[in-house]
Every structure is written in structure tokens, then in C-alpha cells.
Length: 387
Length: 240
Image (cartoon, one colour):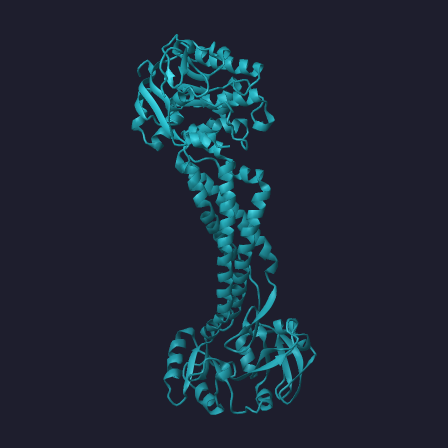
């Protein structure tokens, strides 16, 4: 049996100042990593929650985003009668022709303005997304009216209910705030397709078509049929995969966050190592005594390694506590695919906190291994004579 | 098991310190029988602690033979020695060497962690050992809350708790006042007489040595013949 953990735990309590300082160092490193992971988790959730697996998004062949895609009304007519497309209660194909562009609005964080996605669509497009209206009402056809996502209403003072926005050829009234759950729709502004395309002189230069397959089993066949149709010259993919691909917007942040965390982790490991070397030196006589009582070198090694791990777990838990206030805090980053802002909430999930604690334990193990090895290698008499 | 508990033949320990070759113990021949209470006496640097450390397998001899409880200690590896020490040896230090963050009963329980006893049994054994040394009412006191004499009694309880065959004590009264020293020596004497424990005690205090049945003297690394003391060695050549 190993040396009891009580021994290590109480030693950490006895030298509480050193313990707290070292744990704080580890906690800050963990907090940096967790902040980045929470941000990425929020971003991932926003994109993952967007899109119905039965729905297919169609862009011009070669286009990577709705923003640089072009679809004419003729192509739309050909698309909507493709076999495999679901019909609504009135028997009409569930196909939504849409126009996407960006407009610039000043936000809380950026008074000079940020790009936002403006989507012109038919009422059917709203229905296909299953959105709920939080405040106000939906826009009316032929009117300069928009409905904004709830993140926009929160982050852009000028885009709140009953406010007016100036873009295109005139002034648009915000008549409603929509709730897209946790999806990217919360970062978009919806208006009537006809009015939006007219204001931007793009009556026949629209962006995309969203269609719903009759059944999820026919989705692959529908995609193949659209992609293989030379006359249409379009690229089709599921709506969900289109948004999943946009998670790459967080890649530079992820790289930077992990890079900074790794650099900090090296520093924190050295801090843990320093603390543990001091502990080994201070407790030399105890190490000798434990050996005399019959504990093996392996037990000593494990005991000091366990102490370093306990210290790091404490740091990991502190790190989790430090980032908890970030949970559900709203933020936004530039989406490199749509060239507009995507707003989302930090998500400090139990899984992320577990990663943080494991990361802390890695730092503890790296910092504790050499001091523990030194403790285990001490000769009994040398250990007993050291003060 | 043979009646001979400790047997050494030409036991020698040499080492190099600051480029000087030092002979700490030279050709020591010793035989200790079951139930003996032996005091090893001598001035500082005479080799008495070295001999005790070799008996406890805390150090390895440079040459010679050593058998303790029938076991050739040179034949055991590190891990086996640790286990052997836990099972057969109870060691009492001059500075008590209690673990400061553990209370009395946890300190005494520590060597039992290496046995197959269950937690409840371990605590019962530890409590019995502490009661035996008169500290039944100090089970949950930390070392800093005990007097020197009480700390040494906890250390004795820790040495006893595994019911070892051999108790080795290195200057057990060196850090104690006269009253506490008397208590500790009486306790060791009781362990020897009432419980039949074999005790080997290093001391330079003639009063402490008077509690032992046999007193052996060491001088400059040489173990003098029984009944002989430093005066005898005055006319003999030095070991180093």
C-alpha cells in the first residue's frame, strides 16, 4: 500500500502560501486555455445548431459561401421541381430563394461599425428554419421591414425593436426580434426577398436556394442530382455541413490560445517543479524515516508525484472557477466565410472543465516527476542527515 | 529460527569523505541472541551508529558478513530490504522522526499501511500500541502538541506496532530531559523483559547503558571484546 494521500494533502495545507501561489500560476494557465475552449465551444455550438439535416443549400458551382454565390430566378425554377423535394401544406415545393449581403452597423464593442449578414428571403424560408419571434412581428412582403436575430438586438443598439436602419436605398424599420436558439441565425437580419434584392439592384442576381428533402433518406440522392445537373451549374450540400465548415473561423483563435497556453504551461510546470524540489529538500528527514519504516523508493516517488498532482488539480479547479463567470457571456468574431460578425455565447461545459483539469494534471506531472525521482533516489542515511 | 538474532563476521564499512578514506567500522564480530538487550557505547565517530545502520539494512557493508534473523542482508535488493525492514525491525531515532502532519495514531499506523490489515484493524493495533506506551489519551494529538518524552513514546509505539523481532534504538534518550529519558529507558527495558523483544540500543550515556543486559564498546571503528572498554583500547593500534 502506498503512503497515505492524507500525508500529501496536509503537507499542501501546511505550506499554504506556496501551495496557493503555485496553484494560482497553474490556474491562470488553465483559465487561458479554458477561455479559448469555451469560445470555440460557443462558436461550434452556434454553427452546429444551424441547419436542418433534411435541408440542402444550393450555391453557384465554385462558390464557397452564399456571399460570393449567384443564382438566377430561372435556375431557381428548375431546382424547385427536382424530384425528392418536400411539399408544404399547399402543395408547393419547399424551396426558398434567398439573397445574402452584408451591411455595416455600429455595435457596443465596435462603434465604427461591424459587418452583419442581411438575408432577403420568402416567408417560406422563415418557415423552413422553424424560427420563433421573440418581440414584435415578422416583416411584411414589399415593405422596408426587417427582423433581427436576438444577438444583434443585444449587441447593436441601433438595431433594437422599432429602431430604424439605413442601408440599400432607404430606411428600414426593425419590426421584430427572432430567436434562433443557439444558431448562427441570431447574428443575421431577415427582410423580404423582393425588397432587399430591389434595394441592392440584384433582382436576378440572388445568392442561394434552400430546399427541404421529402425525407432524410433522399438527401444524398437529391444532392447528387443537383450536383450532376450540368445545366444548373450549382453545388449542393446539406445546410448543416455548410455551417459546420464555418467553424474554421475560430481556427486562428484556437491556434493562438493553445500556443499561449502551452508557453504558459511550461512556466507553470517549472513553478510546480520549484515548489516540489523545495518540498523534497524540506522533508528529507521524513523521506528517510518513511524508507526506514519500510516504504520503497517507488512509494516515495508515487507519493511526491501524487502531491504534485494534487497541487495541480487544485490549480485546475481554481482555473475552472476563474472562467466560470465567462459562461454564457455573449461575444462575436468575424466569420471569414461570410465576412460578417457571428455572435455567440462562451460555453464553459463540464467537458471543457475536465480538459482544463487534465491539462493542469499534465503540468503537475511534468513539474513533479523530477523532484519525486530525486526524493526516491535519496539514500536513507543521506536523507536522514539532511536538514 | 536460530536463537542468534544478529551475527556479524569481520563486518567493515569504509567510505570516502572529502577525498579522505575513512574506516567507520573495522572487522566487527558480533553475536546477539534472542531476548538480549545490548547497549552499544562509544564516543562520537566510534562506529556505533554505523553498526546499528548496517544491522537495520539502512546501509550496506564494504566487506564482511552480516546475518540478521537468519537473513543475509547482502543478498537482498532494495525493495526486498524495505519489506524485510518493515516486517522485522522497529527503529527508534534520537530525534523521534515523527511525521509532523500526521497525528499520533496516524504516525503509529504508518508502518501497518504496508501490511494486509484492514483500516479498522490498523487503527486498533495503533491504539493498542499507544495505550501500551501510556498515550491512550493522546491519540489525535499532533507531534507539535506533545512533549519530547511523549513524542519519543509515540516513536516507540510506531516501532512496536508491527510486532517486530528486533528493536533498534539510536540514542533514544539523546534529546530528552532526565525524567523523560528515564521513562523511555524503563519502557525499553519492559519491552525486553516482559515482551521478550531483542533490543539493540546505541548510547553514549552510561546511565542509559545500565538498563541493558550487555554493554559493548566501540572505539575508532573497532568493536571491543565484551567487558572491555575504552581504557583497554588505549594500548591498541587504531583502525584507521
